[in-house]
Image 1 (cartoon, rainbow, N blue to C red):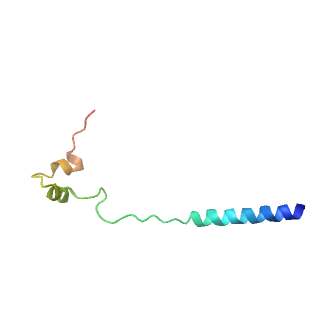
Image 2 (image 1 turned 90 degrees about the vertical axis):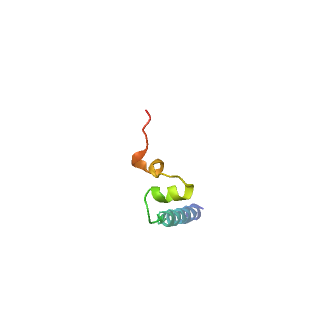
Length: 64
């Protein structure tokens, strides 16, 4: 009985090891292009705004 429970435990540990090994190989692809999404000029064109200033991250007002 002891060898059977030991073999079941070893099989379970091997299965867990395989699952953790495979799950650690996940690959997350990042899209290429502008790092913050759409460039300010393109956002301006899509919304029909006259200025790209509201869409530019460096032009945002900091409220404290």
